[in-house]
Length: 233
Ligand SMILES: NC(=O)c1ccc[n+]([C@@H]2O[C@H](COP(=O)([O-])OP(=O)(O)OC[C@H]3O[C@@H](n4cnc5c(N)ncnc54)[C@H](OP(=O)(O)O)[C@@H]3O)[C@@H](O)[C@H]2O)c1
Image (tube, rainbow, N blue to C red):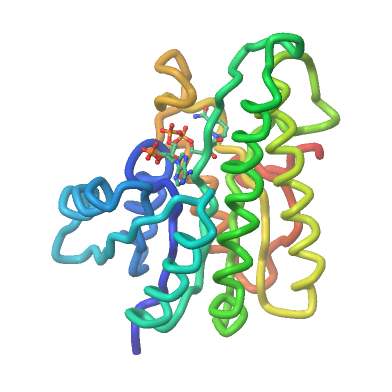
């Protein structure tokens, strides 16, 4: 039987790369999806070992043609998708005030963080639906919690709040299937996006995402978690 397939977007660095590594160690064939095919290939070379299986695929989550091409390649080369990690993300307005945030930055943030996950999920859903235990993880952030909403960084916050809405809505539509669809905040993680002062390593941040990607049959769906603990919407 073929290995279960996990697709990780933005897997060439940061948290996505660590999620890919941890899922490969659990026996998944991991698709390293990256904006740059060369970087995806370099990541595969760096992470590969006798026990770990990866393939490299080009993916820009803002480009519908690229998303469709990903679906085509996966159907043709692997014929299945069991796990989707919508990890690709940007924070273009970090600590910026509402007044200094441009509509263009807001729009680009939504294109990557919200519509990116929407596009990839939609394109891979036929293969996910065919899987025995589909798992979709939307990598979100506490900054998108409406209950904890404060000022600054409005575009990023809104993009993650909207991503959480996508999580709940898709989870509802798949409620009568074996799928689990959840949002996960990895914590404040030391990456290019999080900055190097962050207290959590990418390996640690990846763990809660892998937890949601490998939930058992009776695990939760339509939730928002950090390290397996529910967060307020
Ligand atoms: N770090 C934190 O403290 C923190 C906290 C909460 C949530 N998160 C979330 O965790 C996720 C991963 O973040 P990270 O900290 O690992 O950031 P990172 O190191 O900056 O990595 C971001 C990844 O997203 C990719 N990406 C950006 N735009 C893309 C696009 N249009 N198409 C495809 N890939 C794209 C990047 O690819 P390139 O290399 O090509 O740019 C990169 O692989 C994000 O969704 C972020 O919002 C992070």
